Length: 504
Image 1: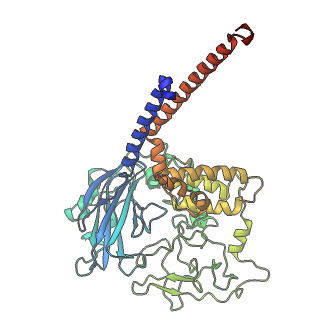
Image 2: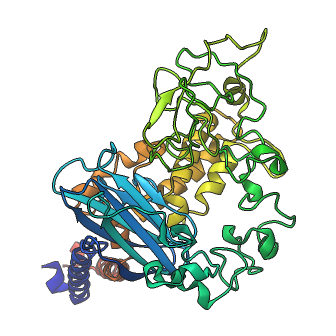
Image 3: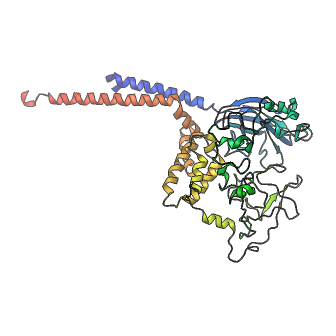
């Protein structure tokens, strides 16, 4: 009845209904967004990924395959690949394996790996991410011994990691090596450093080498101490192999250069000594290496375990004692003999791991400021880049900041404000696996109850239908105000000119 009396209100309601219809269409369309493309085994395909975007793939692994090999060959740019058997559309937070080196890469995964197939049919989920726009080739091959003899060279004198590394290798200019990934068509100052990247006011890790004049000063005003060791890597809480050299001060405190053999925990989880051989004398494999043993015991997965760019015995995952992977392909890992707790401690000596944990403050007023909070802010950035927000580095930094900033009276407010900003950014980007934000994401079921979910919610908010809905609502609100004012004015006038009963 109200709409019949007031045509303007009826028009507003009709516009609202149309907006809701458009929103419904937008939601249906968003459900198709991001579907994984199906890949065939033993077939290399070419594709393209935009800047800060993903391409998603899925490939079914035959039950007869005892191993698979994933090949990622960039034509230009530097794409990364994320692999998982359990998480569709994996990213840096949910992937089991990450391919993030410069140039052509191969990842061999054996069926006896704990993280291989959890069920049949076995499906490998892959995501290719572009920090910048990139063109690449990708394929998954059966690497069973009876089907493919795994070689480190695709042609005599050409190793796989020499392809598409930015340097022309004549031995690689063959069809079996993909014509060196196009490297002989151009000459760069370093592998992966494309022409035009030096001196472009953007820090490119691949160009931070002496041959490229340390990226033309884009990363630092000073020259680097070693290839690949950016200034911000030193004392950033992670032991980087590129910085773990004398010229870089052994990465500050990150690689435990000043540690002794002193530890106190019964299982040796606080051992930060230099032992790098097993009980049987086997040499330990570096924790940041994936050959000959493939594994997930990395700094990203165990940020407090003392792992990284070194090969010393550690116990990051709750074993009974420190251990390591070996460089012997036939022996995956062995325990280490590091003595008994407190055996190698001097009088009143405190284990280095305990010292470092006790000395941590939320924010240290150094120049520039250091500590868990600045690392959190640097790791996650402004919240706009998927590469920053949805990274394990960001998640690890968030967990460290939460541990040291929650009870800091001076900086807790700054920490909470930034944490909420990143939480909403993660929701927008569709990555909700970080434990540091579990309370926030615990309420995401409210969105799921509306049939939206975290990704769907933000796709809905960014959609044309939502914007039209908001515009229609505002127009309707203005019309309602005008109608209400007209009715009020009409009632006031009736009362003003009403005839008194005594005059009747």
